[in-house]
Image (cartoon, rainbow, N blue to C red; front, side, top):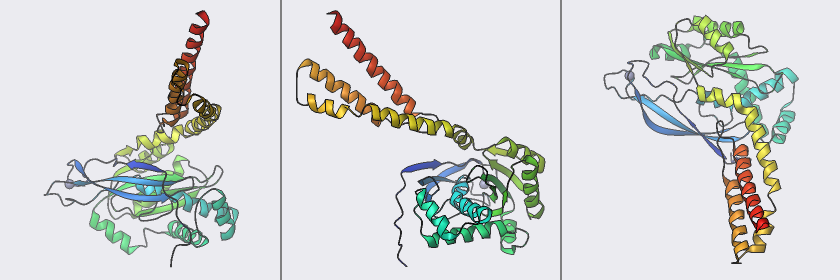
Length: 330
Ligand SMILES: [Zn+2]
């Protein structure tokens, strides 16, 4: 069936790297083998994920050249899935906590700017149902796959669509990409999380050799309690990005406001266009400086574009003031 809704293009690329750098079978360093791509439609935006896939290069290793994908990919979306896990979590929350109908959910998503068809809303709801009813104990296929794999590297993520909604906790295996448990909980207390981890660990046919998370304190403590002695890798970049998100939003707003104030340069530019007297040339230079400040974009989380724009405009302003003073004293 042809697609009825055209998917918007990703406006941003996120490069994901493997947190785990050493082969969990032989301990050798895994090499960056190739990049993989996955475009995900999330609640806030369409993101292109560039995934740096690694593999073990030790020919003696049983996991020789078996691709290992960045752990964080599974936090964005299910394998080969177009819509983000946040969209699935949001639809599940609306359905089961607010009892919304499919057309209501569809309308709300569209209002939020998510391009999705009503059919896809139904599909995401089905995925949500599959996730939360999934039982590692009863899935023979999953048990077999993990047994062949000999061990797992767990990742634990909490997706909270809206403040006040339940959090969808997802525990998955980074080696196979399989989800092992998904549960919506109102709280994120460490005891609840430890119980979830415990639930997975007791039915796993193989040992856990590592855990990856964004390092929230409650997760860290839960992992220490449920899996004492297991190495816990923190995805620092992700942790940082989450921590500065409110700042990033404020900065983006500030940049928008600043841009409004210098909109007048277009008129100014036109006035001095093709003029070669000293004052006009100087004005052209200043306009160019403002233009280049406007196009200079920062990248979250460590680079604040709004702050940088303010700094550059302040410098331009100070330079203008100095020029004005000089002229005044002449
Ligand atoms: Zn190896």
